[in-house]
Image (tube, rainbow, N blue to C red; front, side, top):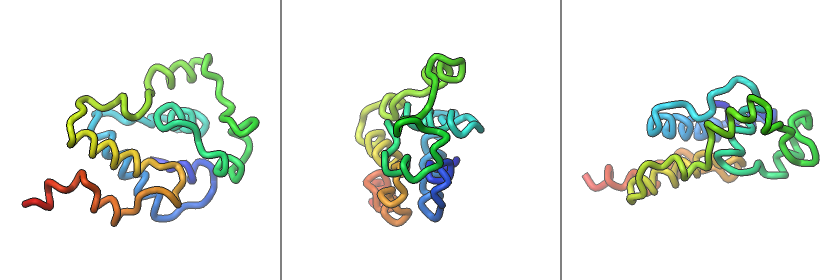
Length: 138
């Protein structure tokens, strides 16, 4: 469960753990791993397909070998590109149902999978998220 800052060699700290928990939550929900790869560039392509483009400020601070003109240097027509396109879709499209519980879960996951670790939800904030409200009512 490599966070984008790890792949981009931007350093890491506790927000990486939040990213990992977000990956585990979506994996439990779906029953499969969404970022199923060991290749860093393919991993970034999967992230962009599911979460949208990486922030330019992170790209500019990263090793440039993955990017060309601030965009991921990725061939969508290659076999790996077709695999990513077939397997990955925007996060909200993975939602099986659109009731309040599902909406809250996906809101929490999206906040945990925020690219920029400075803007990613903290563990304490995650525990206060509305997804956990039913547990507090007991």
